[in-house]
Amino acid sequence: MEAITDPTPDCALRRSHLPRPGLQRIVGLALLDPAFSHRLLNGGRAAALTETDFGLSADEQNSLMTIRADTLTDFARAIAAAYPSSEI
Image (cartoon, rainbow, N blue to C red; front, side, top):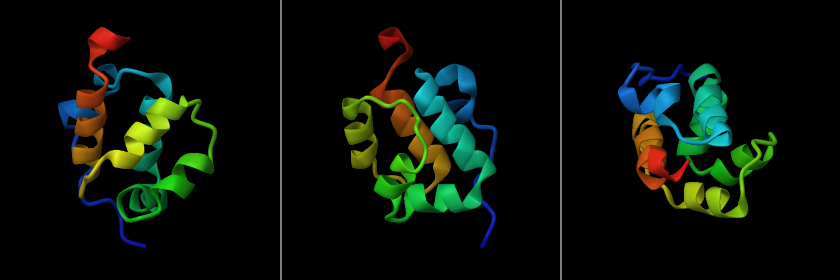
């Protein structure tokens, strides 16, 4: 399995910019686990989100399923945009 090619410490990936613990855990696991990251970005997202209890609400899970992203950075940015810190 190929390693993540986009592990940059982009501001969208910093824990402080992701609004909710479950969403933070998803991005954190994707950074540490290339197989999980691959599933998130390549058609296995539904399975990836249910294999671990991330404590997501149904709305959060549905929102994550609508994200279109080719990289983990884009995925994290989409989460940050969907859940601005003002909603915490």
